[in-house]
Image (cartoon, rainbow, N blue to C red; front, side, top):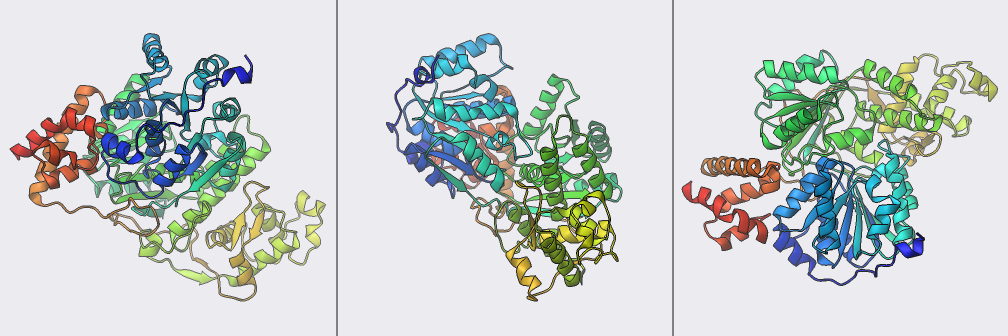
Length: 623
């Protein structure tokens, strides 16, 4: 079948509902969050969008609202079955005709869903990329009135990203086969190189890119040196008993050890990893989304498909593989906007192990390995940051901020010593070698090494050769990482990992200012037993201080949560799909006793008012 024959359906542009009406009647909100409305307007105008927004900032609404404000069918590409199921459950409870077609459903369920799609009943359809991008499926949807394609986790398209998935690569065909249908590509994790790659692959013509602040100011950032991980974990989690959290571990065995240690300490905990049977994984995942106080010790197999808003902390017992992975994992905390906390412990052994993983990766070419080393170095730079961690983290994504006051370095400044002379030696070596080489080569030159590469390019004859012999290679590695953290240097990840001198670095080389480093490269303070405090720095508008409820309101909130859990279990859905915590909190404060009052509660649309209004008002009346 030719491309021309495939895309025969007329473009869908007729607005059948005002976006604000959809927002209020379906989702129960009076206004959009910062950044949402412009994206929605762009899609309603028929222009494709790449939207980079932090986790919890409301990406789903950015394509769900225009999908419901236009005639036709919206097809959503999603990488995980669990995520599809939760999204479909939430939409159906909100009164939206939504379906999913995936391999975990019975064939008859998929057939029935397809009949609803072709019959015009379904408004939003979820599919995995490998199912959508077959000739048979593309041919089948070609004559349907497609209003919008939405691609969730769009960073999976990019070869520059650490989460590249080959099945996503074929999505670039959509704009060619369906040139009149806008595409909404959504992600929370994409640096500049990844964004450029997505744009190049996905959009065949006009599009707009929206990059919101990557800041999650409600999450406290802490890093500490590893020194007996199990005791550190128990000390940390013990001070947060009764809260929901995720503990990330590098191995399956370690998740089991961590969960057992926490249970022995009286903490409600379980382990999650790919070695469990599918039914057991599903049961433990369901426990996590329904139990308020469960802590899950997990490998990275856990989390991507979980949309639990009230995770209060994330603890890393080992160093993640990249800044993107770290950002995505800590982003699973505090999605409700209330204060949350993150802690990462790491040591020199973690760095060695991560580098071994990269070197031993099956099927990885040299370019891929080089990019992964650069990403790992960027994360180590963050871990060794001497000043505000949030500034270092955001700078990686090309974002800027003022010192946050909500990380360990801001709260407990580290002891520093002057290293301006060392910085000048690094600048000299970078300039003399032509600004074309990465960290390892620059350090070899500074240390006076006569490696095959150094000799071959005659860098053993440069004036800078051997000028840094008084420091060890590990010390120079730390100095350069801290220079990157201070934004004196940057790494060209999309190039050959070359070290480049920034504007700030050039200013320092001209004698403007000084450069100071940590006394101990892996030293860190902070977070031990400390509770997170919210910060309103940054531009993400959802971060708000925790609401102080009266004792009477807290008792009602507890009763409302019990009713929510009961309803969730009856329907086989996560508790937050019924109502998120913020809705129940608003309910506890407003205490609605009639339908008009209940409709004013944040997050209550018409469908949920009809389904759940009387049940929850009975709880309020009985309080």
